[in-house]
Amino acid sequence: MKQNRKGHSNTNATPPRPPTPPKPEGKDSQLDSKIDSLEEKIRLIQGLNSFGNTDFSSMSWFPNMTVPPKFKAPEFEKYNGRGDPMIHLQI
Image 1 (cartoon, rainbow, N blue to C red):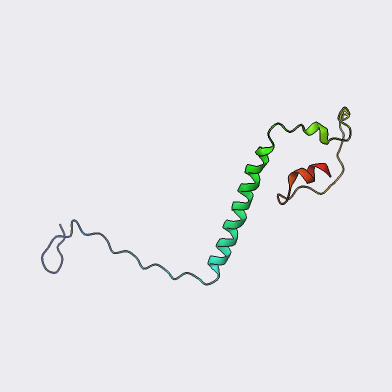
Image 2 (cartoon, rainbow, N blue to C red):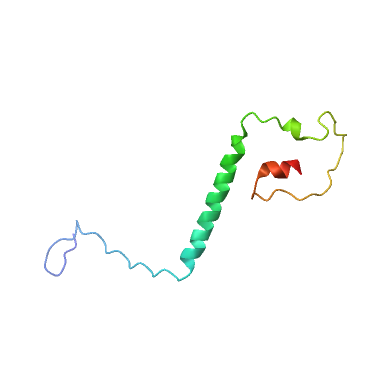
């Protein structure tokens, strides 16, 4: 067993905590911005399941049309995760 200068053993002593580094300025606002962005994405994902029994076939201009084999869809603007997804589906 090790003993300190006064002759007492250090078996129950906890090691000293290292000093905490100072927070860099501007990091809190960046972190807050990232957290806000992630929270918004979570809300959007949760909202995607809230349409219940919506019949999406009513949104199609040609509900009975079949797509031929090897059909390649044209390029179009993809949904970026912001705004109302229902509006994007109608466009």
